[in-house]
Figure 1 (cartoon, rainbow, N blue to C red):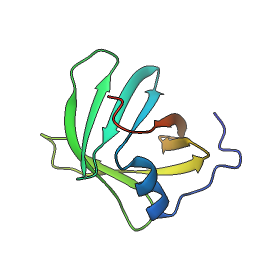
Figure 2: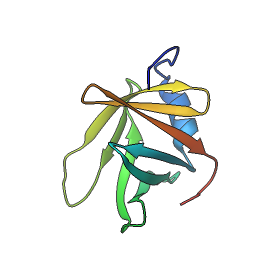
Figure 3: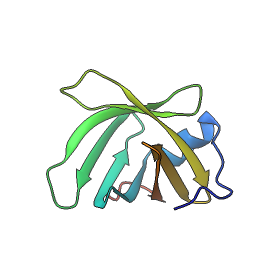
Figure 4: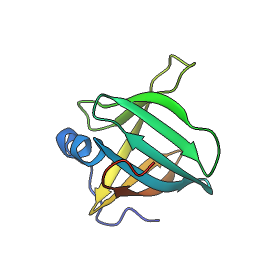
Length: 105
């Protein structure tokens, strides 16, 4: 997918899109669902695999950041927003996702 007219979001917009909502997407051909709780926790599951829990935040530069135990290392991603889609940028690739309102996990 191309970035087209997708724009970097203001931090407040990205928080608003994620907080209390779910994204549905594929990452390198693997479908996944991820829920972003308002308290900063997140739950991720690929297809029908086991769920994993971590934490999330949006930094002042508008990047999405997460920590997935047992690793203590935070990973941050540049994102772009286009309508109801969040485009995640990683490793020179664009990973589109759809925001689904509420906990659709």
